[in-house]
Image 1 (cartoon, rainbow, N blue to C red):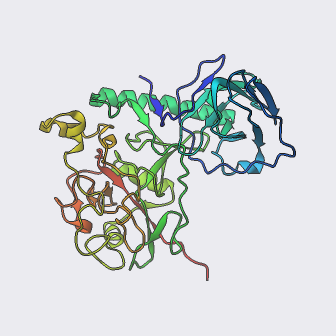
Image 2: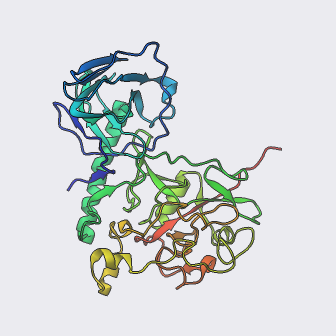
Image 3: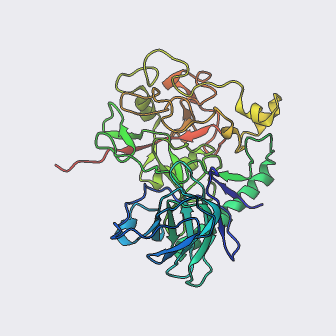
Amino acid sequence: MNARYLAPLGALALLAACTKPSPPAPLLDAAPVAVAAPIDAAPPGIGESGGTLASDGATLTVPEGALKGSRVFTIAAVRGDALASWPRGTQLGFVFTPAGERFRVPATIALPHPDGGGEIVCENQPGDRMQTQFDGTFDGKPLPVHLSMLPRRCAVYTPEHAKALQAARAKEAAMVDKGNTSFHWEIKGQVCDPHDLVRPNAGRDLREPPGVGGCPAGMAPIPGRTPAACVDRWEPHLVEVLDDGTEHTWTPYFNPAGLKVRAKSAPGAVPQAYISQVQAGAACAASGKRLCKDDEWVAACKGSKRTQFPYGSDEKRGTCNDHRDPHPAMQYLESKDLSVFTKLEHPCINQVPDSLLPGGAKTSCATPEGVFDIVGNLHEWTADPSGHFRGGYYVDTWLNGHGCDYVTTAHEARYWDYSTGFRCCADAPTRDK
């Protein structure tokens, strides 16, 4: 069974003409659209009788009856250095206005592809993150795309990047099939399909913010450490490194076995669960970091005020994502039988409502240094070779200790389930004298 790549459907419906579309996949994590070059003169409007606008090598064709009234459309190409904030792998971009304009009859955009191969990916306005990709098999001819809403932009990928994406899809589909065969995943209700590679972080600007106190991006100092060290401010999410060196958003609901991944720490990202200590250490290393030592993790959790909980000395249930009833595995699998605890690898468990939260969603669950969710949300692997994870998770933060003293030691380093996440540490950069 092939993996499917999902994002919220929204109102944008794209269909490739004269070719069979490839499975939908999200754009790479992308920054906001760069401002297009100014247009010297406004193009003529297109009214109810329809019309065509050709600009910068692209064409918009609006059929009769598609609009009510008249609209002035613009198309601006984005090239070279102006693509720096676009997804890596973009060879040519187009920005459209008015983005989000709806057509009562599908309109058509035709976009050039400089190398006659690769792929074209269009996305709607921010907040409506439906993206669909197409094989570029038109031998240099513009690729026609039918749509019911004008996208805000389209990215034309290089052939190398398109090839890398296709290879990644094939590998991911094999992973889903292998998991289904190994674990016999069940589909229950309407919450999710365990064969779908749902990517909640797709199409979002999740760049790591500047580090605090001289630490690397997305990190803050660990109080009282000599030599100085830094810790991720948010539980990391993963990006997959493709064959062409570009990064593709990974799903936090599947184990990343066999993939080359990097750990990134940013607010608003759904953090990676379903990961072993061994895999977490490799993901940290790929980003120039490492798993935290036990004492580093505890120091980071207690913060500069050395409190039992990251937010203070006394427990305040609900300040962190620290408890849930009923158990999400029992809820999803619709059973109170203890056999559900043999199915903790199921990718739908963390997709049950009110379970795993994006980083920083609990704004008060933070240390004075701005380290979020270090208690609750996900267990966090540390570097102890015998296998430790700390801090508890969204079901339990008290069975194995309270707050920053919570530690589980019953699992070896290759163990993983829906509750296991991690956080990276790093030696603080040395400053030139």
